[in-house]
Image 1 (cartoon, rainbow, N blue to C red):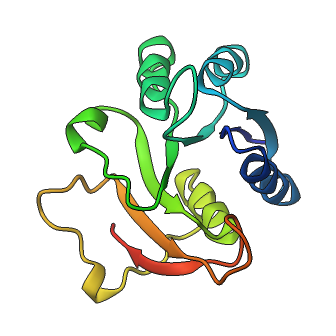
Image 2: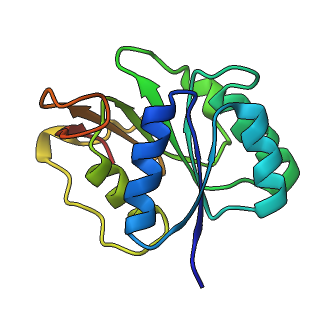
Length: 163
């Protein structure tokens, strides 16, 4: 059975790059360009994983996760956010957010995170200097990527990963 992924980003180019990478990996992908559209699609299709931008019109990524948790019991989520944007950990407590990735990010790394979230790949070993402080949830990983100058959604590498 093909696993379904809902990709949500108001930047069409990012949504399309992510969708293409995931489709090539064999996933069934649906794209939404804002949080409200994503909410309606998720209720109708019940995806296995949600990849959502944080800052979007009509309903932001945290609001989307919150509403889907209330309606469906939650969908494992990878949250995308702009570099330098801080997320208040209390806002996401109790939500099924498994990863937070900063833009720009590597589509290859995002695919690896999706596979890990679905239990399809072994987790990448964490670097010793990237150990998770005891105050953070062990279920949440924060990934920061550093691009190589080939656009916002390509060519990055893991610069830091918390697990």
